[in-house]
Amino acid sequence: MTTRSLKVVEVATRRRVAISMGAVTLVLFGLIALQDLKVNLLPDLSYPTLTVRTEYRGAAPEEIETLLTRPVEEAVGVVKNVRVVKSVSRAGQSDVILEFAWGVDMDFAGLEVREKLEVLQLPLESSRPLLLRFNPATDPIMRFGLIHGEPGSAADEISLKVLRRYADEEIRKKLEPVEGVAAVKISGGLEDEVQIEIDQRKMAQLNITLENLTARLAAENVNVSAGRLEEGTQRYLVRTINQFGSVEEFGSLIVYPGEGRPVYLRDIANVRSGYSEREAIIRMNGLEAVEVAVYKEGDANTVAVARAVEARLREHHFAVFAGKGRARENQHRHAERDCDKTDSR
Image (cartoon, rainbow, N blue to C red; front, side, top):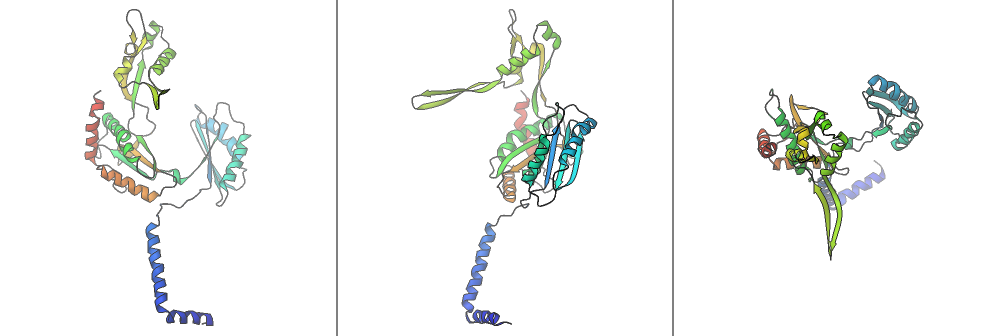
């Protein structure tokens, strides 16, 4: 042992109380800091990948590969520090994925890719290439599904409508006010839509064009600002509200004054309550489900937000099971009771 080490040992043995108090102080401050230390799911990472997305509606995958994918690959493949170039050509869309080496300044790499895309000649019918950057922080921190029925039973149209409506009108409103939640997105199920099926023969007899009917619907279904009204020290905001509230109100729209009797929309079209075109089908445990995805704010802690969301769900008699994300069946029966009034309209 050196002379300096011997002096340290000598001081520690002579001032045992001071050394003990210093050690206890360090342990105490460490415990206090541990309580305030936030636990996050993932570290802040910037993945060195860029995606160039170009859309060309109506084009087949082979045309997409020839007209969009290959020119984009040749243009951006020469960018510095690009390690791998991959592409996916599907109907109406081209994705070219660029993988860079770790440690590359992605802001500068994005500028280089944009410079290459600016001078690229693509078909006039295609959209401008979009540069997308993968960021794990933009992915939902929680996903759970709402299902109806037992495994092996098929979900009918009414139950899928009820679940989607309940998720939009109830669950979203309960989760969005939670601290740290940025957005709640609903997907799957059947989304309500008022469908108007035109009878072209009747419209031709009355000399009503589709453009006139579209303009009439847009003019009668409005909710716009009408300015403000000042009275003394008071200021009132004025809005023009004239929105359809039910399918019957749509059918009662006067399309054409007519001679003696007005022509209503129900006279030239079949107005009914349906559902919008489905872009995705969500399944959980073999059953069709409605997915609820929770997104956090940029600076929010993932673990804290997830615990707060789960606590809010439990407050409203939901149970989120690990790995399943299935809500209780009695809650869905409650949802059906809540939506019976709407279905009966």
